[in-house]
Length: 228
Length: 237
Image (cartoon, rainbow over all chains, first blue to last red; front, side):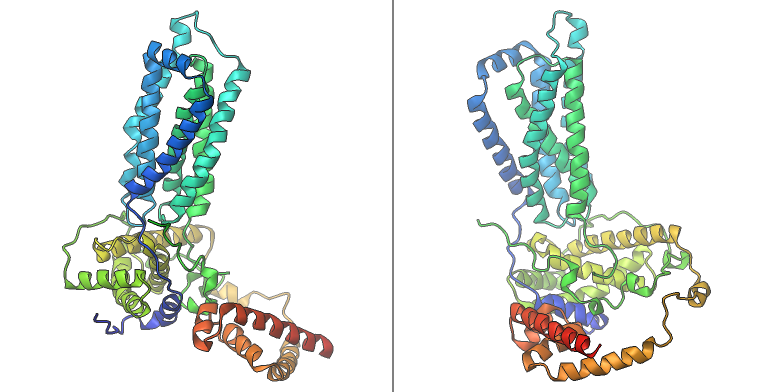
């Protein structure tokens, strides 16, 4: 291979020499779709394990009886998948920021169908409205599931080098929140009403905001300053 | 397929300050974002598709070799990147010495992100997007700094330093003499560690390559040498 040394790097010789001296072999990262699939596989495995302890038949009947709920669940599943792909794309230093729009249609479906469910209490007065203690359980489940999902996703995203750390973290948070909200359906023994959905929305917002705060630091490239 | 390796330098601290001769941070406490530094508003970074040419294919081959651990190819590639980064930074509106800040940040970014480069794609396009983003980062950062700091070199020069000690120079000269004697009395391996890591401000990696000793050995010897020098200074004081 021709490795004749151009002279143009002369003022940065020391840095270049230091970086070359520190070079270790690396394996190119797998494509973002493949990495997203690995994370989604982990979520799926968690879902399968949780389904062993969930009471599945009533959940199936409830989803069939209330179309807005399976629409919302379809929306949350699609949001988790598309947001995970978008987060892995955004984690590459050269990816266009337009990838952040990818989960938007699915998120709109998720929010719209959930919002429709929120009206059920007004349309059908006999709907069971969960007390605050039960809705708090939803909050706890979403947050508890978010921790392992976030830990794995952030660790995988850090293997790349995002130059859009805030945006990457927000989209990763959306993927985590959507995945957690999807699995919440396994432990949701009542129809979603307005208060319940507000708590869900709060939990999802909390996960996204926390991801933004943690991820922006975890992914942030070094600033233009001297090293300590 | 196994887990990909993480990048080798985990943070900038692995390199000595002297490796950053153009850092904006080194320009002094009154660094400002002057209007002359910014020629135009930064444009958004976009991945412009490029037809692969001979230069690009050569760079891609160097980068693929660097991913496999070929230091010569890597060093050649980084040198070859410098004029491209400079050109991108200037086109983004970065002026003066700040262009070299962008160059250094992009070189560090290439190093840390080298596992994200797909050898099947254009290296030059990959590099250009990274350079554009890092140039915009610099413009934003210096813009924010400029909003809260003023450029007043005369006020800076005339500011009386309350902690200044007129006799400090004599004391320091005296200390330097003591330390020089103590340094000369150190074992060769400890003296070597101080020489490369402290006096010449080489990174552990650089010093390790130059002395053909392990980083751990250099660290241990530096620790022992500093302890000995501290002891010598305390005995004298």
